[in-house]
Amino acid sequence: MVGNYSFDRETVRQSLAKMIILHEYSISVVEHIGFKQFCNVMQPLFKVISRNTVKSDILKIYDGERSKIMKLLSKNQSRISITTDMWTSSNQNKRYMVVTTHYIDDSWTLQSRLMSFFEDEIGHGDSFNA
Image (cartoon, rainbow, N blue to C red; front, top):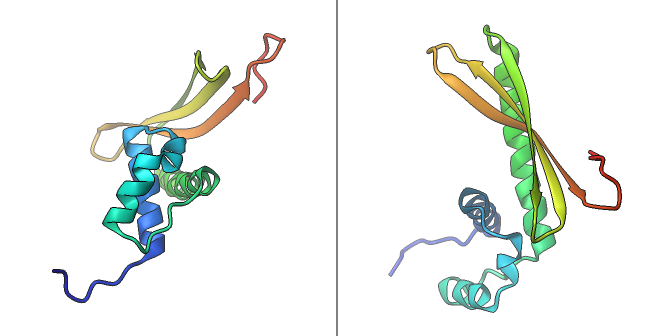
């Protein structure tokens, strides 16, 4: 028995979004019947959110983390290197590009941070439209 427990829907949503990010789960996991049943058993007060809502929550986390990184980089004394990487998803028919920044922190440790992420559906042309 848990005493003085208070259910906080926003904390649960945040934790769900972080779990999806951490384990690279498909956003559609929130629509799986087994997941909905599990959530209902664990906490009947939590109504499982839609894939659009969890996507929005994930993007909010990304924006918050990106803001923190931008502040950190503005104080950085070392040089910054920027790289890009592109790949194609065979099962989703989409292309992705990531922009990453690399720098040495004050402890002389190499740091890498994702700065931007672009998604593009594959069409008839060859060019990447980000």
